[in-house]
Length: 339
Image (cartoon, rainbow, N blue to C red):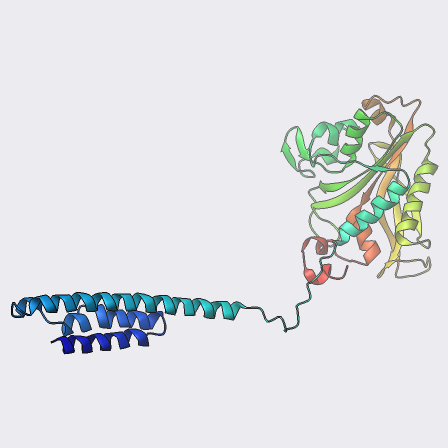
């Protein structure tokens, strides 16, 4: 009986030792310890043995069962450790392989043109001011002398949050907030995002960016305005840039004008006779209406000033030869990688 039990033990140990992976371990467990496994079938039924053989059979049964359970647990740990080693080996970096060159980030073209403009204006003595995009109607319209019946106040042209709050339609509101807290002279630019109910096409979008400017001091004239904006155009586009000023109307400036730049299919044109070129309006400007100065407590008899509003996207389209404003907002890496 003892020899048969020892032979059974050797067979079970061989089955356990042959398990090489988790699946093999499970198969070995069932074959050795299962209801129809080697132990259940091969070990004698102690109750059926003669009384004098039962003590030895019991000791052998317990000894073999313990030995096989210990062997199975040891084999499980070996298989699991081997699996961990294989996983680590598969994940190990081969330092002899060539590295991957990281793709460098690039600045958005609107960021590039804005940085250029900030550098230019700060070089002229302007400072950068900021304000809320969700603005009170007072600052967006009333303080700028925009009449109650002006189309810009209509809900079909502006995005209203409620009767008194609107998504700012221009950053001119920053000028009012600045003048309320600053004594003249004032010399600021206010870049930022603005919102209007424009249909989206190649040159219009409901969300775009402006750089509004304001200069208030004693003795400021329209000649100062023209000279400043012409100098900015030369800095941005080169000494050959061709500009013109034409009369226009804005409620908060008087007189008012539009500045246009001569451009062709590839961007800025320096040839006045080029038949493929045409004028493109890039900004509105004018002398600050005395009523606007009075609204913020300035002495309009002593101080004068000029203001302007530059469309950032339009300037970027000119500088980089971009023909569709929607490209700025589509986040197409093929487009952005060009800058």
